[in-house]
Length: 205
Image (tube, rainbow, N blue to C red):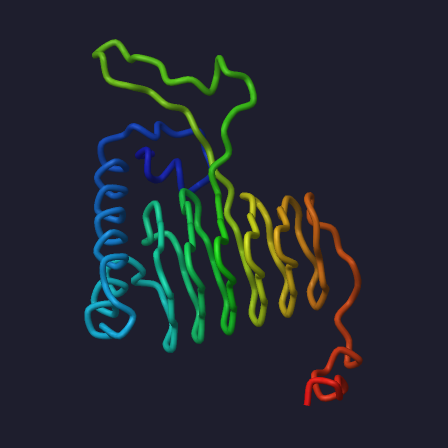
């Protein structure tokens, strides 16, 4: 297996592999180009996203700035919205469903670093090049979720359909569908029911 194939499969891989460094550099340059555009430069932004995020649905809007490690390993459904400072480290596949809304300063991070520094620190190979052992776990966010501001989602997590993740949460384990979850670590607070319908909140109208 190539280092890229190992990475996508969730195996130990060398993050200093030349192919991976080239892919990251390309993605980082595209992010910089996107971040240098204005929000009314629709065509320019679309062209950049077509290259950075080829696996995306229709009707997406990403405010920017954005920071993606690869982009090509992230899949985004239709009607996706992300506010300022979206970070996606997609060393393993990140799959985001339809109608997902994301608040500012959200981080979606698949990499897992070894706990022991002897395993985590970079080493020199016989030829003098660096060897950095990492592995990653995929992240899935299913349809119709709202991820509030300053949320961090850790590798290996699946967030079920229709969930709301409260501001500042750190999601370290799977979240069942149609629930409101908050905290660090993120815990299920309660189920979302018909009693939460906006039309019942008369004081808002």
